[in-house]
Amino acid sequence: MIIVYESKTGFTKRYAEMLAAKTGMKVYRVNELSKIDKKEEIVFLGWMKVGRIQGLKKVRKFNVKAVCGSGTGRAGEPNAETIISENKLEKIPFFYAQGGCLPLKDLKGTDRFMMSMFAKVLKKRKDKDEKFNEAIEHIENGFDGVKEKNLIPLIEWLNSR
Ligand SMILES: Cc1cc2nc3c(=O)[nH]c(=O)nc-3n(C[C@H](O)[C@H](O)[C@H](O)COP(=O)(O)O)c2cc1C
Image (cartoon, rainbow, N blue to C red; front, side, top):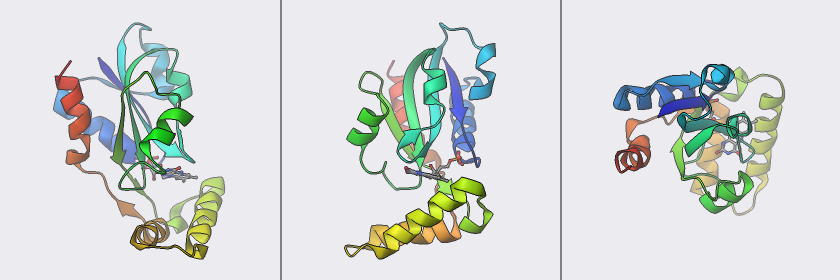
C-alpha cells in the first residue's frame, strides 16, 4: 500500500509524511499519479475545501482503500455523515485529521476571499458559541493542529488489515 496526498498549504503534506515515517509506506502527490500502478492499494489524504476532499476525484480511478480528510475543525465539518455522502465515500473507510490554516493575511486569491467571507458569516451568527469563536480566531490568526495522535485511528485501521 502507498500514500497519495493533496495539500495546498502544507498541513496535509505533513500528515502524509508523518504516516510514511510511521508505516514505511511510499508517499506520492496527486500530480505524480502517472508513476503509480492502477492496482496499487492507496490510502489517500486530502485537504478539504467547502466540504469537498481535494484531489479525491483524480485518485478515484485508482485502487483507493481509505480516505483521510484534513480540515480546520476539531472534527470534520459539518459532520462525518455529510462528508461521506458529499464525497461519495459510502464504500471506502473515511478518517479525519485536524489540519491547520495560514493566517488570513497570508492566503491569496479566491482562498483568501472565501475564508474572509466564511469568517464574516461566522461572526454574524446569533448562536455563536465557543466552537465558532475558536474557528474565527483560527481563520484570522492561523493555527497548526497537526498532531501525530490524530492519525491513530487510521494507523489502527491499517494495522488491522
Ligand atoms: C477556501 C477554503 C475552504 C475551506 N473549506 C473547508 C471546509 O469545508 N471544511 C474544513 O474543515 N476546512 C476547510 N478549509 C480549511 C482547510 O481544509 C485546512 O486548512 C487544511 O488543513 C489545509 O490543508 P493543506 O495545508 O494541506 O492545504 C478551507 C480552506 C480554504 C482556504
